[in-house]
Length: 327
Image 1 (cartoon, rainbow, N blue to C red):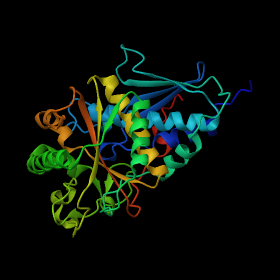
Image 2 (cartoon, rainbow, N blue to C red):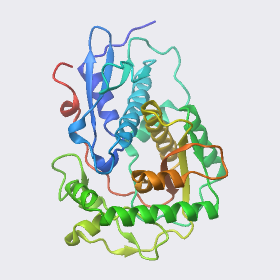
Image 3 (cartoon, rainbow, N blue to C red):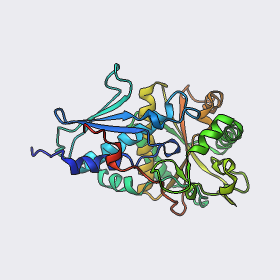
Image 4 (cartoon, rainbow, N blue to C red):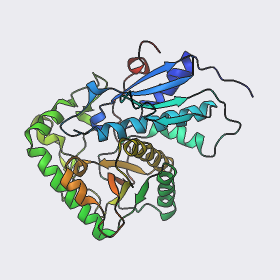
């Protein structure tokens, strides 16, 4: 079987794909380090870019890094490797979130690899209104299957349950915009331009829902000079609920892999998405978000799905800026 060179060019492609993943407040809380002797690419937490007020346990950081690992896995398969991903491989090194071994080539190209790889570069969160066109059932089934591949569960609640979830999200949004610590932290992550290449540029914030159907995260309330004009959002939002059976750091990482797999699969079908994480940031609301009629599961993310125009992508750090010097 022919071997592949894990040279500087290949490493840059892999890391560039990884950093295209979504992260809370676009914090991009990851570092990468290559061990050339073992062909293992380590994915490490960048705790200097944590958001402790919104994410005191580091759950969202794990999800963010997990999403980067999914992109890395897709890119490795695209380049011809058969990547072996290990989550939290060293209990003595808690900042080592994942290790991706790249010493085996793949004898076959897995179905869907190329479409997912193409979606890595096109996917970004949409904070603007969607149309009222429904997402077809067969597409939703594929998103459910994508989550299942990563050992998570994607639920598609009905109208009544969706209204309940959006009500809890609205309550979380109200709390966050009146909590001094969360307000100050969120304000610090808003950027007036693309420098530095992390955080949320003001141009990407999008409008607020004039009719109150959808409680989008309202960064504009933190900086009145960047107030967003109201707009009419979809009247019946399609919300998906991503859950895990347990709630450990490894499950948070799997959530990130699943979330990004779902988002890439949605992008393949031109379905837009935005993330409603507000209720996850308040322990009592996160508990209440759980579907009372299903077996106990831990809700990790609410995903809004629909159709609409492309939004404004957020900046990303260069591969060289997130590769440790020893790589």
